[in-house]
Amino acid sequence: MFENISKNGIYKNLFNGKWIEAKNKSTIEISSPVDGKFVGKIQALSKEEVDEIFENSKEAQKSWAETPVNERAKILHKAADLLEENADEIAKIMSEEISKDKESSLSEVVRTADFIRFTADEGMHLEGETIGSDSFPGFKKNKVSLVTRVPLGVVLAISPFNYPVNLSASKIAPALIAGNSVILKPPTNGAISALHLAEVFNAAGLPSGVLNTITGRGSEIGDYLVTHKLVNFINFTGSTAVGRHIAKISEMVPMLMELGGKDAAIVLPDANLEEAAKNIVSGAYSYSGQRCTAVKRVLAVNSIADKLTELIADNVKKLKVGNPEDGAKVTPLINDKAADFVQELIDDAIEKGAKLILGNKKEKNLMYPTLFDNVTTDMRLAWEEPFGPVLPIIRVNNIDEAIKIANESEYGLQASIFTRNMDDAFYIAGKLEVGTVQINNKPERGPDHFPFQGVKSSGIGSQGIRYSIEAMSRRKAIVLNIK
Ligand code: NAP
Ligand code: G3H
Image (cartoon, rainbow, N blue to C red; front, side, top):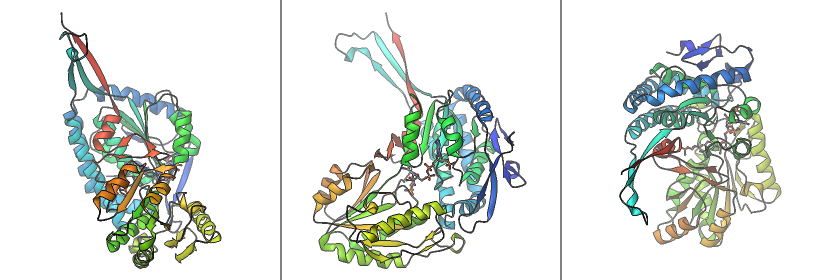
């Protein structure tokens, strides 16, 4: 079903229902982070082409907004079915393109189909309200405000490399069900998987122009997109640095931003340490730590820190390292620059006296899982997001010190607390400056209808199916004045 989206290895863009070649013929080569193998080329669109696409999206949105929501939902259901039918093919490309292990690539695609279906159904159950005037002092029963939700217009969806299908669809589907048109700017590494997703929506019968795509390097075309006069909403997931830059340059455009994290796992003396260690290792090292919700530091109370470190190390040793094709869980990072950055953090920790338990081995962009104990707050690893398979254990004296260090981070995405004592769990959860606290589980975004949000440098606004639909629609009130 994907024969139209590329020609001679060059992937096109979806424009007004057709896959088109860029006029300027400028392309970017995508090679696999695993072995450098050629995956395909994507096009770097020009500003003129971007303008045409925005115009087209703006026009297409008008009739899409008038399309009954039950018809929009049918198209989304069809898209979900097509995505599932083609899951193996898309997962294979994703695995090559971003070096994600096969099982996780497939589960990302299947999860996305479920996400789209749930979004279609949720969109049909979004209701407005009526508000009578007489509850406000001095007013009689002579006014009724009829409040409904209406779309915003053209949504610009910018997704990151680590979930190119899921974090594209989690913007596209809620935007569409709310009646917006969408322009998808996929990550450069991950673009090919994301373009397959766009074709799934197209083939499901989305009217022409309701979903368009723009490929090209964010560093070159990004500023032009986010400051475009026709953009009505920016839905961005990516690094804090880029998110902050976008927030600075875009003027009065509403946005939803999911950014970086430094999620802490706080482990108390009464925790089930075996379970905590398993969760921490899966949380820290899956997809080689390239998840915003990865466990990025452990705050272990002194009395159990030795035992916990030993258990974590035992679990890390079981991780398979290498090629995603061979079922490895820790695979090459997205590029050499990312691996060099992780190595910098490791070197800094070693230089400042952290105790290396495992790892510190690098083969090009393949970083072996690395574990440190006795990390202290003067080390970069205590604060910076590695986005790689390295985990610092920071020892603390008590609960309040754990809370203090957890909150000193510039980030505030999620945190985990491992304990059997619910009083302690709720005391800590109440004090943590994060969007979500997990009790006795690793940080994670799903299930996808839960609200998911970061505070401080971790984001603006809430994702999650209903919350995303709400973010990409607005209230409109019509007041009936009764004589
Ligand atoms: P990134 O470098 O910030 O890129 C994200 C997206 O922004 C890509 O599509 C990128 O395009 C684009 N972009 C770059 N510069 C831009 C600009 N000036 N204007 C507009 N768009 C621009 O992030 P990443 O490396 O893909 O992803 C890793 C980061 O994302 C980590 O920090 C991680 O924590 C965060 N993340 C957060 C969440 C969350 O939900 N909180 C989820 C996933 C990832 P190019 O690819 O062409 O550069
Ligand atoms: O990378 C950031 C994603 O939003 C995290 O999603 O917790 O399902 O891995 P996840």
